[in-house]
Image 1 (cartoon, one colour):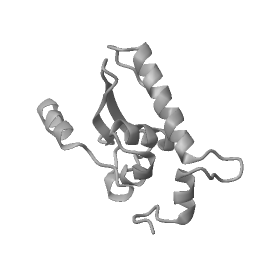
Image 2: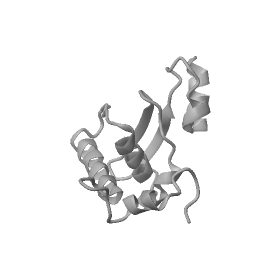
Image 3: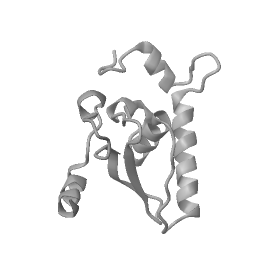
Image 4: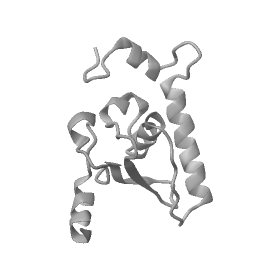
Length: 130
């Protein structure tokens, strides 16, 4: 039995090899979007690049960047529309999540209903700038 809001057997099935009719298994999404992120990072190493996508793809990229397997996807919070996440890709192939699901630019408090959160180190940096 799975814990959390994604505790259904259907959700867990999506993480494996099964998928809804006409759909892609989550494991495949995880590998596909992570490989795409790494290709973009390698091609643009040393530059700042903005990649825009939908929540599922971004969540999978964050999961991989945190070094978590696809099975831990339920531990990665959802971001609201327009949330900003920052991942640094280093020349040695490693990655570091700098910000996750930042939504301070959104005029309402989406933290109350999405589970989005800020990385504490990032909040400290923001206080110096604000």
